[in-house]
Length: 357
Ligand SMILES: NC(=O)c1ccc[n+]([C@@H]2O[C@H](COP(=O)([O-])OP(=O)(O)OC[C@H]3O[C@@H](n4cnc5c(N)ncnc54)[C@H](OP(=O)(O)O)[C@@H]3O)[C@@H](O)[C@H]2O)c1
Image 1 (spheres, helix red, strand yellow):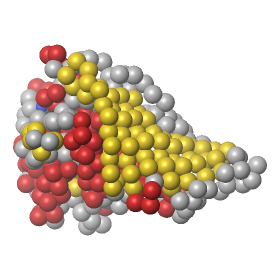
Image 2 (cartoon, rainbow, N blue to C red):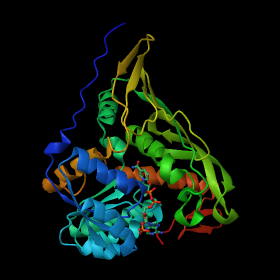
Image 3 (cartoon, rainbow, N blue to C red):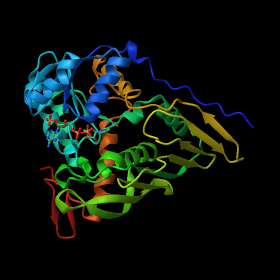
């Protein structure tokens, strides 16, 4: 087998990052893992939590020694917070992020930044107007494995990228908020976002999007999108075939086909793990990253944000806002074809108007 030398991940030690004071907006599933990851692995300090209810904020905050706030506005006003981590459901990202920015706080907003590109653009504009930092918490792109992928593609080690084939399905129980149309239900914003984000990160802006989907019964019997497949075209003829579902687990691998080699990120591709490169002579070469949970990986994004803010930057290199917008534009285009309308958006003859409110 011929040798294939993998680049080293260029991720600095999170313990050495400047220490910021984090305020957590939305004490839910991901917030719990984010805080645990920061406390276990990094140099970051978590100082406060905000919720729509003081009781829920206190229940989350007391065992962790956090200041508890009964509204997202109060959290934003806390003088002991430098940066707010927005971990509410997608439909609340815009309002919570704007409240934080208006109070002079930097923001790290869970993926996707908003329900559509217009919302992400509004967050970008509000941050720019105040000279504050904003980024999408797409944890995958901050992980060491993805830095290897990024370098392999950027340095042409796969040749020219011609195709991306990727899937991400999970079984989400009917009690999950993804079944709630009022919370922008469906697999796209929770799971599919990773497919669109990495495809457009590696291949550029999609020049055309073709999508098919199917509905399933959602909360109260209202239909909600349950699975979605999309074909993205890129300049130069590259294509991405992406499939997401909330009806069951899929291998969740991410394959990048190049003219000289094919790269496969082991599933689930969005977390820590390994990858394989198969060169055109058929030889397989492994990069053995250790698989891990959210707690093993979420601290990388916090450290990257801390370094960027401490250096006076308003965006983070691993996830510039333009790339968050690029992914959302392709997701908007897919939804437009399927007539998937989220709360605050409205349908117009011939499609969907993806308005801000
Ligand atoms: N990076 C990852 O791997 C990952 C994994 C899962 C989720 N996420 C992202 O993280 C975000 C939150 O997901 P989650 O599953 O953690 O959510 P969740 O547990 O369902 O909700 C998070 C919190 O948001 C608050 N909330 C609920 N409904 C709200 C509403 N209508 N308006 C304002 N606040 C509301 C709730 O706190 P209060 O009721 O106390 O205010 C709740 O505890 C999503 O954007 C998702 O895409 C990321």
